[in-house]
Length: 115
Image 1 (cartoon, rainbow, N blue to C red):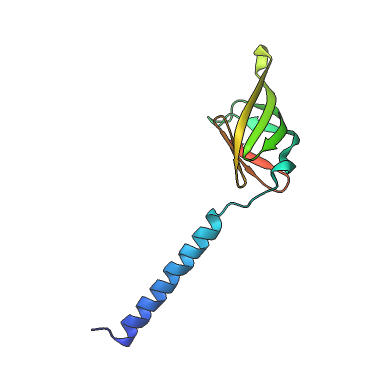
Image 2 (spheres, rainbow, N blue to C red):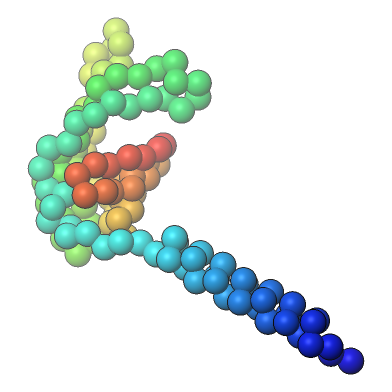
């Protein structure tokens, strides 16, 4: 038998679940960016995620974006071995850029990522 009090609790619980699901959907939605805004030179610091013992400057140039394919090249120092340079393609999905094993989240004028 459903009493007014237990019915009210069920309604409150259901409202909380719906609110949580709505907030989760908003948080996971990706903001689309103008892909052409990525074209150009980007620079910053890379940090080796295993303890952060290795770090240094990193430069990346995005030469073009076609559909969701990003054409990029870059370099970063490798100590006595000199700079490591690379050239590759990546994919753009919403505000997420994947290049090789690296994933970047793109903001209005920043890129943050991990490898």
